[in-house]
Amino acid sequence: MSGSGERQYLPVQGAQCSVNLMVADLDVARAFYGEVLGWRFRPSSLDDQFLVAGVAARLTW
Image (cartoon, rainbow, N blue to C red; front, side):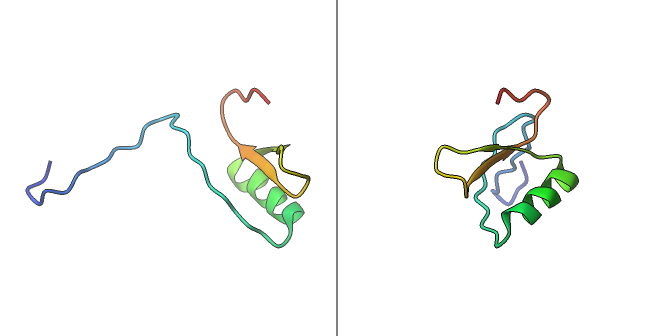
């Protein structure tokens, strides 16, 4: 720890992260994030305007 009293947090590989993203065009956002971040998408239980996205070595969707 540094002398400033601040805590330092290290990233944890495989830790779950959750983000809500509102977009005007879901198809464009899906194509973009799929290409750039390698996200895969599945329908959510809410309705067809919501998707669940993720990237992992093995997804159990």
